[in-house]
Length: 187
Image (cartoon, rainbow, N blue to C red):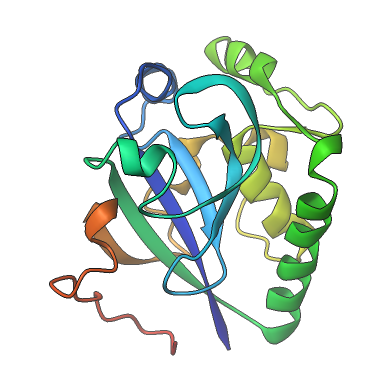
């Protein structure tokens, strides 16, 4: 049995504030990691930490990029037990997007559709929640009763299948004073 990690964050930027208020969740951004250290976290977001204008597939790290600028980023880190086959498939599916990142775009129009409560599906375009949900679904990790493009950040909040491992400042996640919340799934 392997563990994967779902990370929800709130940076406090203008865009995250907007997304949080539209989606009605305390956390506006979703990433996925394949290890407990969260190195790296995969998602769709800012390519340049200083501007949301250019966005796409990103490999995020806790104390780099936007998170280095926004040291007060709040997060929740959840774990999910998966089979070896699901883990391998997830790795391969993320790698396909990573290796072909220039073919994928951030779906800014999906944010507008979100305000209208209408999901939007566009080929080779993602927002963070759609990307994470799509990678899970393509890897036979079926935790949602809806299509991946219908998943919003709030759908990851307190999901029954997840084990809450940590909540607090993202910058403190790997610090010595952080102790992991015990879970029922082996590491």
